[in-house]
Amino acid sequence: MLIDQAADPLRDTFVNFFDQPAVTFEAPAVLALRYNANILFACSRRDADGNYTISLRRVDFDRNDRSRQSVHDIVQRCTALLEESIRVEPGQWSWQHKRWKYNPLDYPRRS
Image 1 (tube, one colour):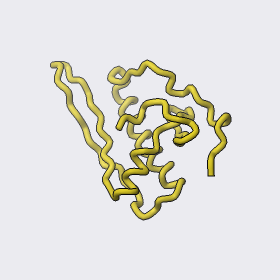
Image 2: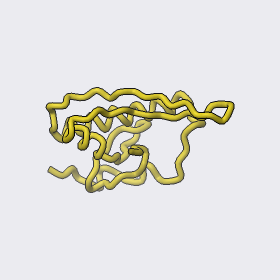
Image 3: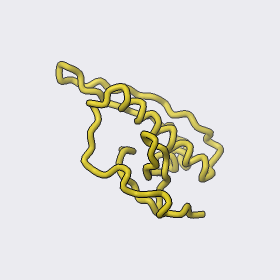
Image 4: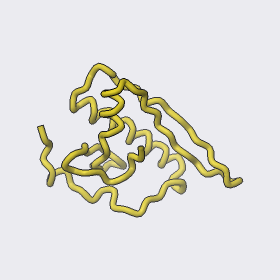
């Protein structure tokens, strides 16, 4: 699942992404908790020869905590891994949409 897309501010959670709040899909976290599944963060890098290298990192989380805060924390962990990957090789990441188009102050947190 791609997590660097602008999600639905009414359904998903705002997390820190490059020091700005960005609404981010909760689905990977919710599904992992619901089905006791692992989350693997995958990042591809284009090599000089035109091939790709894919790195995988396991995202650790408490499988017994299904709270809203836990979902948020998992999404933040995944987003932090994405940000780390981008910082290492910024030329490998591009997107053509407004990633920070929603302001969390305009979307009060649902209960």
